[in-house]
Image (tube, rainbow, N blue to C red):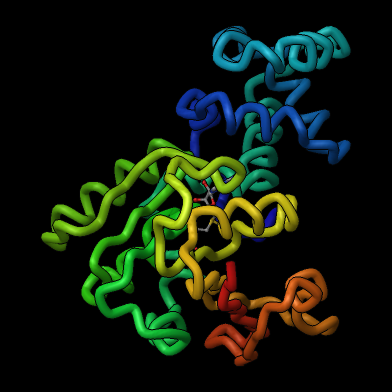
Length: 267
Ligand SMILES: C[S@@+](CC[C@H](N)C(=O)[O-])C[C@H]1O[C@@H](n2cnc3c(N)ncnc32)[C@H](O)[C@@H]1O
């Protein structure tokens, strides 16, 4: 789903050449008919990109090969550019991960106030995990107070960005590592607080159990989104409430509804 974050004309189709295997498999999972058509046209007219996607993500080979087989027509430069601009805009929520400086300027990060996280619990001397850190919105917010923060992020460009930022800010207690919410690279009972924003929810039950595993008894799981601009007429997440999360609501600076969730975990 596009959130109108990027102007396709400003970004090259070569952005896809920065993507790693995981991201390519997310691209191969896109089912929107217009996105599939654009991918099909672009790959039929761009041998380098086709070669890269197939070889970087071998499990997606059949998908991409079949896409290209469906299109026999070659397109002129201008028409192709229109398809490319469309694809970049349609996949903006993924493409933006390749451009952390642009991502950090998006409203949901730039307008967000760290008090929204710091007011949920006391982070003093806590061992904190931030899952799917992105540009480090949550991780850096607690770094001054926490004993240490592990920022787990699967995208190389975002890890690289956070490492530079951490160095600039002179943090010595922020550790940035590769990993995913499905299989956190930590032993049991390691953290006092696990935070995330816009990550939890692909598979609520499995992800919840994995977060509980790395959390000590009486630790907290916190889901703290940024300054979302979307109205949520259906209210807070039913899934999280059913799992026993408490929540609070506020109206974001961009006039959307933001729900923050937390749960103390008894083991
Ligand atoms: C919308 S961004 C939010 C970034 C950050 N949490 C924030 O709220 O500012 C989602 C982040 O989750 C990461 N991500 C995607 N799939 C993930 C997974 N399975 N496990 C952990 N992180 C994931 C993405 O790479 C991206 O950095």
